[in-house]
Image (cartoon, rainbow, N blue to C red; front, side, top):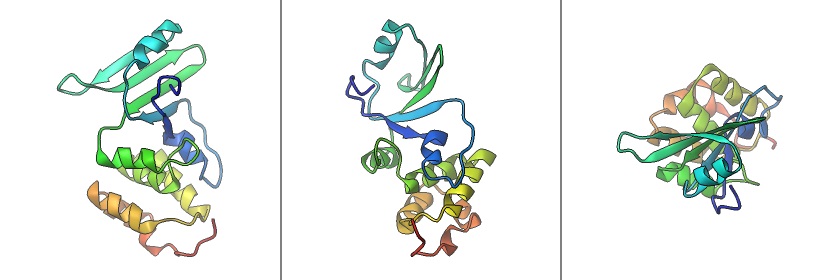
Length: 157
């Protein structure tokens, strides 16, 4: 993906594991990219199976890649928030704050567990940033539920 100029950023559980107190199992790797141009052709040339998921207008927004020992999902950054998250990436993965925002949006049991473990790890967080995007995505109540508003600003990390 890098060779195609897609500048992929790791998201999902793999990104969360960078910040969790303890690891957890996952079966795939998820990426966020600015564009999908050329990705499917390049992958299929390498013998990988791809499935393109399109929105109601027919525009692709997700490429699911499967092959021998390959289980990868590539999501197109379509929102201002997603593009901001790419800009804030650290060493090719979402920042800790952006992992939390993504997990607040998804809000499955495993996402709440990721948030709990990340908060328990004591990272220094830009809570204003998290609250801004949690408000924009209408998930501020979830951030409050996990104790986000009660974190110490000077936590080690």
